[in-house]
Image (cartoon, rainbow, N blue to C red; front, side, top):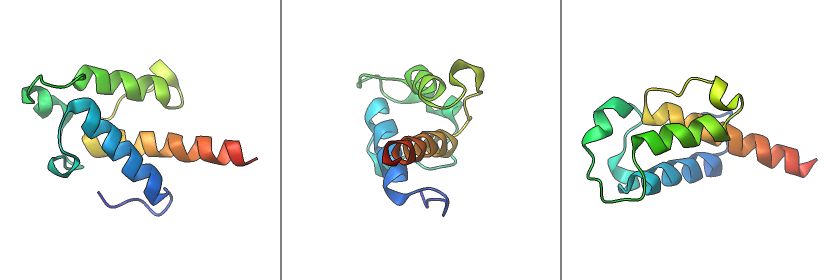
Length: 93
């Protein structure tokens, strides 16, 4: 995934790896355009699943449960990276 210039590269990488770890998938196998609905066939060998990813995004990102979870891996990674950047900026002040 190529980071948006508005996001720190490190935040994008951390978010991407966190998603891959939650889904028990090698980060290189995920693509930004992967639809969450199409990932339901992932092997249930890891600690998490698609519902866990949706929950993570809903509660970690601004708006909490009020925001709609993106339909793609890239959208989820973007929201998580934005939140990581926001927290980093807040801790620097």
